[in-house]
Image 1 (cartoon, rainbow, N blue to C red):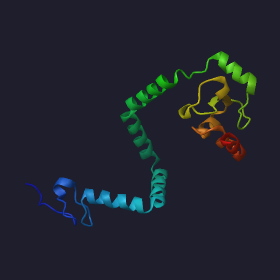
Image 2 (image 1 turned 180 degrees about the horizontal axis):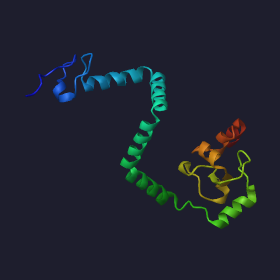
Image 3 (image 1 turned 135 degrees about the vertical axis):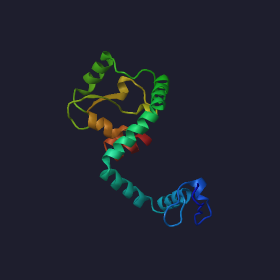
Image 4 (image 1 turned 45 degrees about the vertical axis):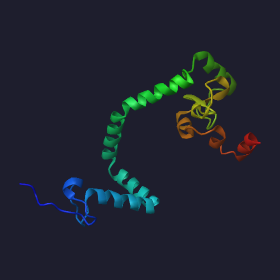
Length: 165
């Protein structure tokens, strides 16, 4: 025997739209209400997400892992597409030696010993994988720079003016 049909305040049949929630909302109404609240105050919504993530690290880890597993094929294809467009971006020993001869063996940003090479003009922004566009860099600086140009990383306003002039 089926339970009696219930309707939310907007008239949605909760039998079709999901379980009935306290306050007279169906699942669709609850999602709409949440979306409206996020649009009204995005800073508050972000803070709530951060707090939840801090209090639930195991759920965040599980969600990230699930998302990675679900999108693994897409990530592989995206990497293959990038390699097809940009070519092989592995640094051969001759190129590495050429860059190290020019810059030395310390990170160009912080002076720590280098752990890899950074593209001064990121590949994603049209930079090439050539000696003129590579510099030795430590892992933390390379991760911090992400896909930004070098003058942003160095916090130099004059570099931006010089390049745009």
